[in-house]
Image 1 (cartoon, rainbow, N blue to C red):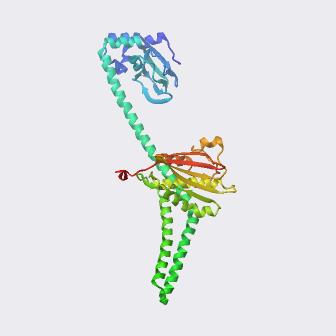
Image 2: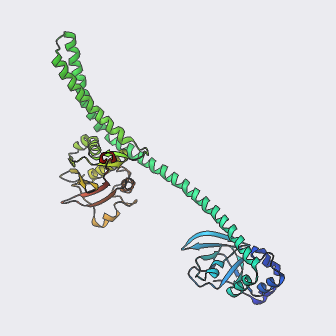
Length: 405
């Protein structure tokens, strides 16, 4: 392990028993006991980055740091640093177990090594030494506790930073998606607006000429109402989709959420000759979650399906909901190029993509998976029946407790 021993130097070095009094374990011990310890102590010298002892090995001695600094680690993870005046290895001697840590020097170091036999004799002869050991343990635990608390607060801050970055990424993805949908939504809103303005012109003209009847007025009012509801429906869908706030889970009508998502892309996808098929469960399944994030998941799957069908002669995206025992399943299937079998297990990993730089929503299926799992759901993918890919999401069914009373 790189220790350099010179017996003559050791005896001269420890001839002055006061060197042992650097360590509080030996405070207030009588001279004869200190002499006994000094005569049975070896002086070990280490360079930087040398291993003193290894976890999992037998323990037959403990070490005192006269000069230098060491790192204590377990399974490659450092959890403590000790310096001059501290010691280690005593717990293995007390319990009789193998060493539970690896110790490595962080600087040129001089250590005193005391064998198990001397260790036992010291504690048999001196209650003071045992008291000093307990005091040392107390101080060490307090010091390490402060370190652990500091690390916890640091990790808590880092988690908050990551959560903020995650939410910014979600917002960025939503804004990109909204930009792609703008043309289609504008067209969809223009249609009912054209109906409204047209009937308002007819209404104003008839009012001026005094030719409008109650029946005609009622018919025009119905047309205006239908057209305005179409606008409200589209605006409501885009407002819901744009939300990313971290609200408490609320009951969601799954079929309605899917319809709103399909309405947002219907015109845009129609321009690319994509057929949207929607087969929904008849029992109106309800789930708990964040509707804005649910719609973001659906929009991402629709976007991926659209891109996968870019070169396909037949372009169909089919969505289906089906209730299964205490769960509801959503499948989103396409007739695109599919996923290579060797990539099936990589689809939800953070680094996986088949799209060139600058294309796609930017969110990634790993974040889709995280959103689904945050809502207690699962997501998987498998090859399509004839072509393409099928994504399957399951959520626990929400049953209103008040309805069962």
